[in-house]
Length: 154
Image 1 (cartoon, rainbow, N blue to C red):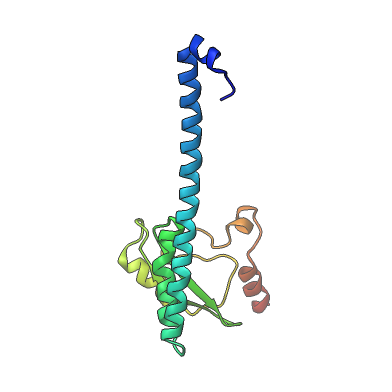
Image 2: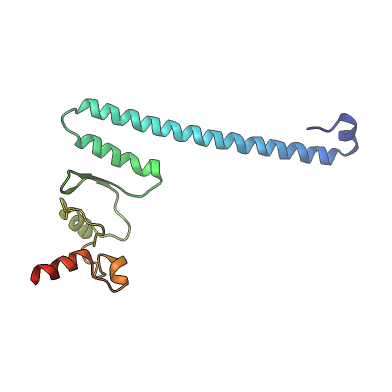
């Protein structure tokens, strides 16, 4: 506050309003710092938990995968989390938590049965009748898999 005592005495309402504005600014800054600090603590805690799980099961990565997917929704503000592994040829679903509200248990199980799978650019869920490669199909082009099928028939 840069006002002198005489200026403050002349207009106390203005002085109070200025002090209130400064107090609100300080509170907002403190809340932002606390939020950042809380996020850092959460991330560090998750990292420590993963390191503990890794040391507890050095030959089995599954507990680590499960821990990561259990912690991910809270850290990322998400309803679900999935962890995939690519071994150079196939994509494996290693761990999954949560079920989207629009999925039935049967659809979730059908999705799990798709793995391991050959990686593709686009994926079509079971029961989805839309073209899998929407970017190409939308423009009237054939998808890569459609081109491959037509070439192998000729």
